[in-house]
Image (cartoon, rainbow, N blue to C red; front, side, top):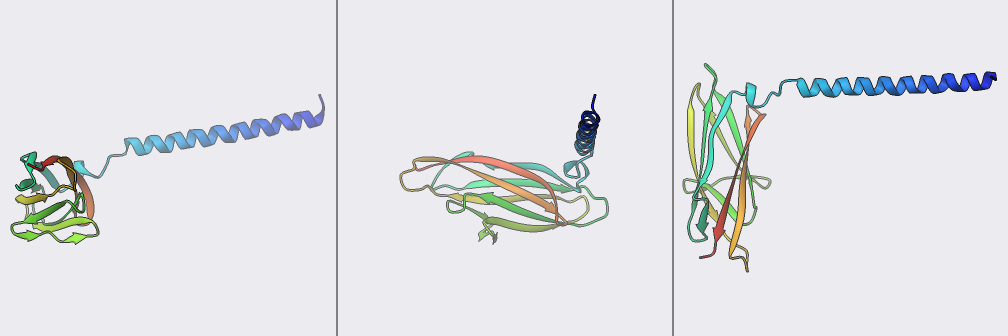
Length: 164
């Protein structure tokens, strides 16, 4: 065999070894990320107990009620909860009492401080309209929950609005 051919084989072996090392290191990194505990719900200081809308189907002339119950799991700390409600921008409005919730971008927002072990029960009024030509339409309301500026969870409800 010629010397050039042996050098060619050595280069191929080195390249193959580098590729194998990169694959093994990448697989180990991905596996470590999968088995690493997630900081969201398991270690959160807040529990989302209930998130629902009633009725799930209502007329355009009626209102729905969005119920949200959360609990501060901390023994001795007050926490700041920020709620961002994502929904259809034009057709769905959320009120707390008689006041329209403020918006941040396209999301309705609400902030509440929960005392240690406090359970908060919030009822939001949902007003929905239909586009011209729609007789029946489905909407959703997702809430993104942050505690002390750290994301802790999502709630999601679907409801239907009919013209008559």
